Length: 112
Length: 108
Image 1 (cartoon, rainbow over the protein chains, first blue to last red):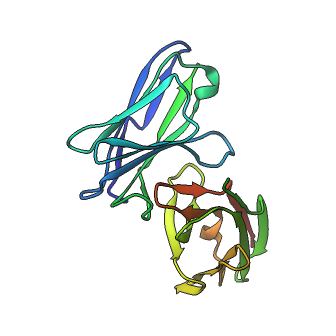
Image 2 (tube, rainbow over the protein chains, first blue to last red; image 1 turned 90 degrees about the vertical axis):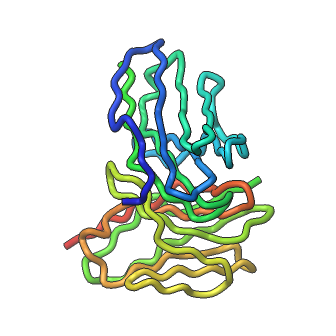
């Protein structure tokens, strides 16, 4: 158990819909990262927050957005969903930027 | 730019030793990490090299050579449970850049 929690574990929705994925980092970790992993693909970095502020942006679509709240939990919002958005979405946390990352169990999103 | 290259697949026999290589091109980083991911599971941290040389953690060792822009993960006494994907990753000031991963197949 990494100490990082993600909800929900599974999510099935339809094209065009909007969903919110939630992540609680390990106690004491200030950085939260979001990754997308499609079938047989590597980890695609989406976005990073550090202590409430956006720190780095990767291959995140404009339809996607995220935020980190004062209690350091983070949410990833995916809107106007497409079939291709079906993937595993991982959240990871670290004490500071660039430190070893600890991954949550992931949210499996299926868009029908 | 930054990129990491690692083989997409490696096959080895149970009980043997296997080495997974990682080469990189980057403008700067302060360490090379390795992560393991079983099918359907989350990546988990294995090893980290901040300095050149070998780091040993039980059956797993990791090596870094900055002058050669190269690192590797060495797995000894392979067990069936080691069948997984292995990712090398560069630690930078602002983020970690992951390679595409190497799927390790272990034959009995």
